[in-house]
Length: 208
Image (cartoon, rainbow, N blue to C red):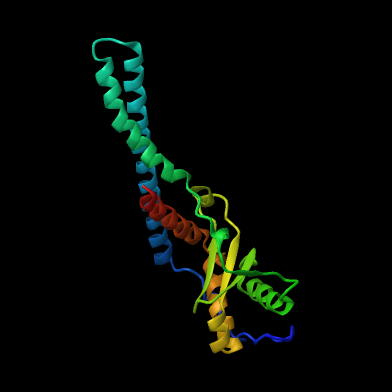
């Protein structure tokens, strides 16, 4: 990729509805979204119940009485469970903390011209950061939190140098286009929500 003008031509005859989701796919996606939303709702409600129970028991202990000590002791497990569960809702998975080599457009203009053109063709956002790694891999990574269900996070791109070494330029373009395609999904925004919600739900469980 030494010359800025090198860019493999894409297919010329692509059906306009090639990536249009089917009705069945939409139904499955909405069902998945509803299930994930229900999980998060139940998780928040259960966490809130533990917090409210702990608060009531502590207030009972503060007011005094014969059972003040017992109320305080009973509040401890409820408070522990509330904190234990609620902390997972405020996690942030920092995709920006990669230890791989970050490159910029000033350092690698031909690479960034290639990536920006490919992202534009795929209808995907251009990568916020580009890093080079020694892994046989290409991946999009990003910061992840529950806020990203409403506000998309900026996407970063990892390019494994072994892939660059063994693939042709056309093959590398196809691999990177696949990564950009994960986040384009202009035909159906719920697909992005389902993906992010699944990541959030999985991380909530892992962070408990």
